[in-house]
Image (cartoon, rainbow, N blue to C red):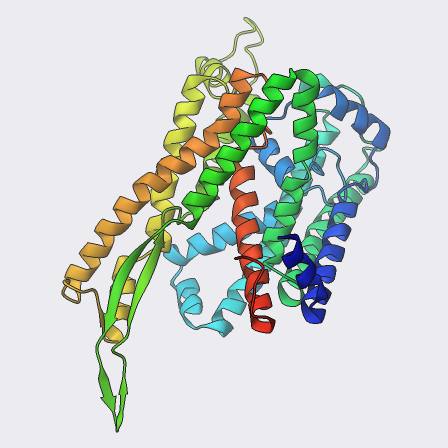
Length: 438
């Protein structure tokens, strides 16, 4: 493996791409530690030292930003606005015919969708940065764990400058990701998310080692290796539906006649259902924060008590069960949007393809629906179980919910790692007889 890595850096073109990618990743990580204007860096670090856990949507955004969110850096929002914009644009294809038409137009139409995604990213960054600065201004960013003032000034000009800086930081991150995709190795946006999440691993493992015994740390590492192995196995698993193309005579030449297959991954939805479920579970807690106690009795509404009891703490069984159910539901929903059996059947029929033993048309559509629903079931259960690992660890050994070996973090780390290694391997095989993998 070491020889393969050395061989990769000895290839001039690939070496240039690797160094370019590493340089932009270094710029991205550097920006995560540069505080935004008007931020008291010393007080922020003291609050971070006092705060052991974060919850709700802030936990997810802080994870994707590599810890930059709670440091109020210029890259505080990270890549999260772009992820949200991409998901929204993708879902809007179902309800807006214009978006679906652009998607089917090929490269030109998809470039137009990418432009819409960029505009939406900036709009979401502006909204999220305003919310973040407002929360920081009110002193509620770290909750009751820290009451130190983290903003130097709270006048309108200073607040506006912070919002514009964080929004510009998101635009810069989006540009860095696109540069990596065009001139570097791998998908730029995915690699930046990979870097953000991987940067939190050492601190999380060190916290477990310092606060727990060595035996628990060894058990955590052993569980981590097993989980990574299982995630790799499932992420690479797929159901291959055989497709046969009939021969066609065009002039004196015969076309078609070859056999191929339609790959249906076990985890077709990726990490998106976990993000959806986390965001949905945060909404009740957010609504409960705006409900004030009765001024005469000092009591809060019953629904606020219910939310505070069952839907706030990640170690509660009701929270875990609802989280698991939402992930399974969103997995089926997302797969139904992304994999359209009728569209696949029509494309096969158009080019003379058919599934052996299945008639073209409606029978093919029904067969594809049956296979996709069957393969989605284990994928949804797998996603739910992986997402519950940090919550179970939080309940069992008392570590924070940023437990490294589970949930969103491990899914992204393994998925992006496999994708990047495959791309490097393909580029090496173009220039050498051997690739990065054997």
